[in-house]
Image 1 (cartoon, rainbow, N blue to C red):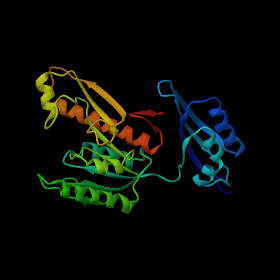
Image 2 (image 1 turned 180 degrees about the vertical axis):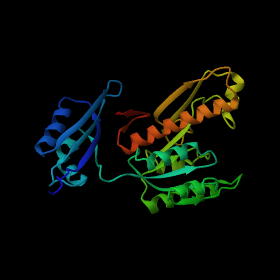
Image 3 (image 1 turned 30 degrees about the horizontal axis):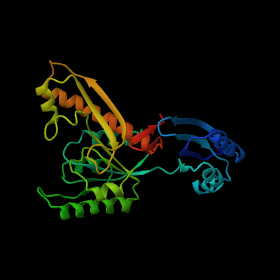
Image 4 (image 1 turned 135 degrees about the vertical axis):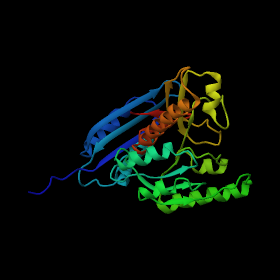
Length: 293
């Protein structure tokens, strides 16, 4: 007996000035096209006057690619001054991961990817050190050592960034994940990667900057350990926030204990941010984000 035909699935994400009739127009057009809406979420921001929407739907056999839907939605897009994108869920985004010498986030992402928890392809891992070359290759992935000498000038740093960009282009990467990649990206590279690079850091900032932040936090007797995942911008560690979380700590814990707690939180928060990005759940709202869970 032949297997039943599986209808292709798509995600539509959109933003536009809020106005009556947006949901009706979008859902009505999908219905007329023979689509079945599986999930729909929307949000109107009273402060900015913007409307955001994410629609997950299946499509009939004669509508097989996102370009066809873009044509179908041309009138609705123009009528509502809409920024809209259709994502074919059969096409998984490709990600490049950058890491330095702290491997907890990298290790967590590789495990989740291998376990099928992240709907993406990993094109390569890049690093300014060789520390995690064997770990990366144990997953059957390419590892690119792109060294960056201490005290390197702007020209050398820019050349190294161009090497990262070349790796991304070679494997068709949609996203760069900074999994504790401990180098500051140039404003030019940040602009090139706008909305396509995610970073993770501890949430003590602006306190406890620099080396050994958890030791600094221990010395001050902090009671909360947290992490923040955000899109990368030229403003260091100030890009639009995607996800945050915290864990309570107390006086009985050592600096090493605090570091372990912090690394766990960082790993979980980064994994959530990456998953929501590759599932097309995040929409930019100025300096903020709308995240449809």
